[in-house]
Length: 233
Image (cartoon, rainbow, N blue to C red; front, side):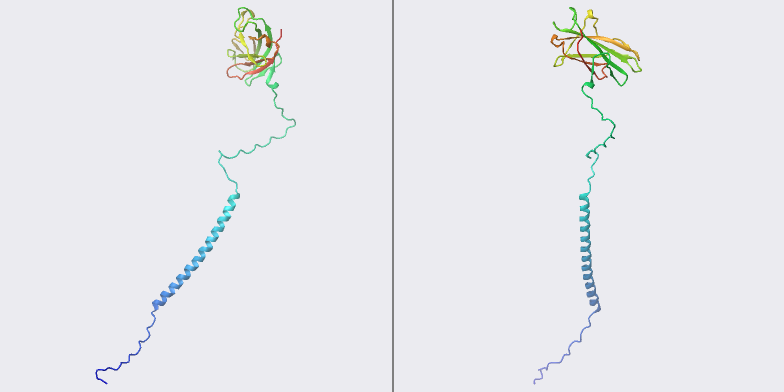
């Protein structure tokens, strides 16, 4: 064997290295973290399911609940029925709103004023009268006012109208000195007193037998009231 040839030398194996404790601690922490994440995930899933169920329940409750609207859009509730009375209330007829010409029927106002058309009388329109057409028949309308208020009443704004015929043709006013027909009422009426005035109108001869329609308003701030009647000779 050559001197330069070297026998392989025995090299004993390295002793086993001890596992460092910090590695064990790290592994333990990783395992715990993974377990915590899994556990947390399960809790979140359970909580999410609970929230979804609660939301479903809440939605179901809201669908069935009434919707509250604003006062502008709230539907009107039906009025409560009035208590039953012993006698039914009669609806006013057309005749109840139209008085008959004569000395028995009046129209009353809330302030105490009363209106009546006492009579309708036919007359011949004079040659020098103003109003009407040749051949027309004259009508004298007698109106009575009663002042039931506590104040003196001014008659300057009393308005009287007359219509005749099937179509209710408006009659012309007639001013005839021979019949003492002028502008109607003049002056005023004291409380508790009455006053009567006459108004002249002209209607076609063909309307003499028809029912005449009349309207009287004591003033501009009074509603007109309606009367019906026929001419007397």
